[in-house]
Amino acid sequence: MPEDKKLCRDDITAAIALALEPLDFVHAMWEVGAIAFDRADE
Image 1 (cartoon, rainbow, N blue to C red):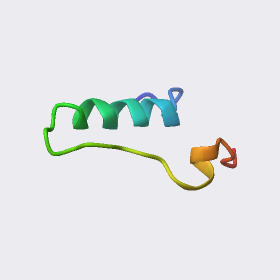
Image 2: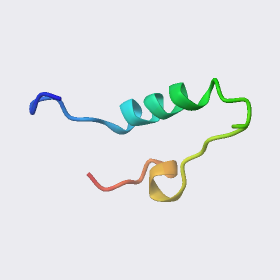
Image 3: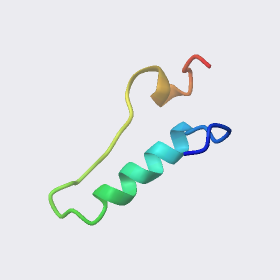
């Protein structure tokens, strides 16, 4: 990944969801803590 391109939470969440959606045994995914309430530190 180029140094000027930073991974953001939305990119990571989208990649995880894309990997998990086709799996029949995965029924849910959630975020917890401060990040779930959009209160994460910068």
